Image 1 (cartoon, chains in turn yellow, purple):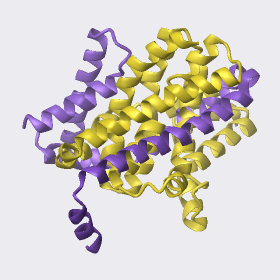
Image 2: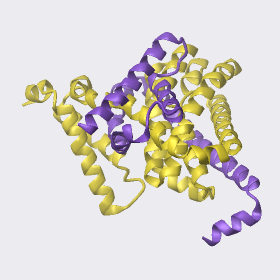
Image 3: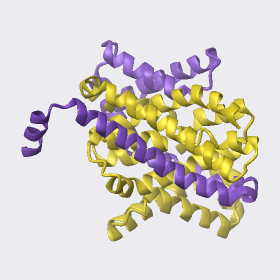
Image 4: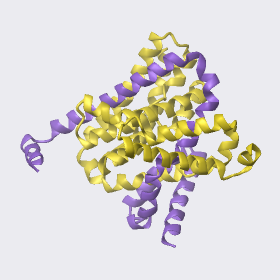
Length: 230
Length: 126
């Protein structure tokens, strides 16, 4: 049975899709933000792998075909952005101001908290790119001498967390403008947050996509400066 | 055939993004170059919206699913994460909330400051 599971190229993709469907069903039934389909699917797949004693690399043999679509999908985020270009032009100042403030807030808060917890320089630069998209974050972490596997883990957790708490945070901080919501999601939790922004609305989704690219690029510059501060 | 052609165009843009990533020595991923290329192509009229729209909408809709494999990969990085687990979790939660709050608040204030008050009232009445 186990050999059958690890040998099949369809196992990884199949179990991921099934877990996501289960996640959608559970959310529909209970309507709680914590019951996020991505979070449920991740936990289900992890549990299944541990129970069936299937190693991650065997699971990924099949699941990598799902990840394969990630680059084309990110490229497609240009489409909603293009459709909202007029809105972007009208609010250009607010948009650049908001993203820049967010990126600075990210770098400063990681710096202060790392000092507070007395982390090493290596651990600090590992966490610096935590709010941006995995591909850029990994590059920065490597460049600055961080631990790449942890950077990736923290980026993913940040994404899922942002996706789950977005509506709650917007309510607490009274963020009502769709543009502001979208930028907040994209700047704080990159593409996984953008998946949530897409559910909130077209404007939110477009602004969140924009924030992924802009916040990522700003962090490339900002992180190299901040790396010298601790 | 319409969908196949759209997917083909999206793959071409992704491929060109990868090419730029290879040539330019910056830690910017192929997907971000691709996103910028796609946006430029649409703005400059090299591509028309309806040449990519249907497949683009589909790919964006199923995007959360594409993060499952990477998220499950946390299983493998657990041993590296374990020694600094508590500070990392706290930092992650706090900074995520802070960044989201700051970005949203700053954007919202700047939008509302620029909007003439009269305009806003009209908007609300709608």
